[in-house]
Length: 184
Image (cartoon, rainbow, N blue to C red; front, side, top):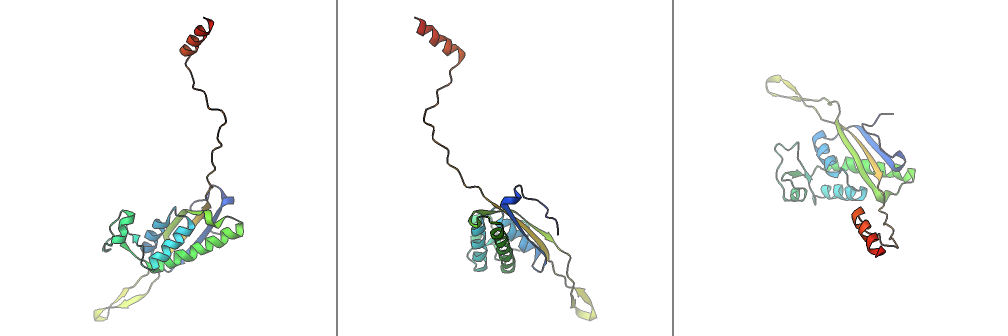
C-alpha cells in the first residue's frame, strides 16, 4: 500500500482515493485539481461536468504560457482559462471512487469536502516521431499521479440561548461605591 503525502486529521471521518501513472497531462490536471480544492463533493462533480460541457472554465494560473483568455475565468479572478476535458474526466472518476469509499465507511456523502488533492509528475512515457533527413526525435507524454482526501464537514450547531442575561462586570471602584451608597 502506497503512502499518501498527507494523512487526514480524523481518519474515521475521512476517505481517500488515488490514481498512479494516469495517462493525462500533468499541467492541465494540476490546474483542474487546484480549482476543485476545498470544494464540497457535489459542487466539485457539478463543476467538472460543467467544464466538460464548456459552461465553466478552469483558471490557468501557473502553467499559463500561451493559454488564451476567456470571459468565464472572471469568476475565479483570473484572465486565462481552458476546458481540459480529459483531466476533468479522470478527476470525476477519482471523485466517484472516493464517494464509494465514503459510502462503504458509512460517511454522509452530502457533507464531504475535498480537504487535500495533489497531482505529481509520473515518469515520462516514450514514443518517437520521424523528422526530416532521416532523424528521429522523442515524443514523450507527461502522465501524473493523483491523490485526494475527502473529509466529512461538521454540521453547524446552534448556540443554546441563555435564560438569564449576563450581568455587566463592574470594577472594584464601582463595587465599593455601590456598597457605600447602600450603607447610607
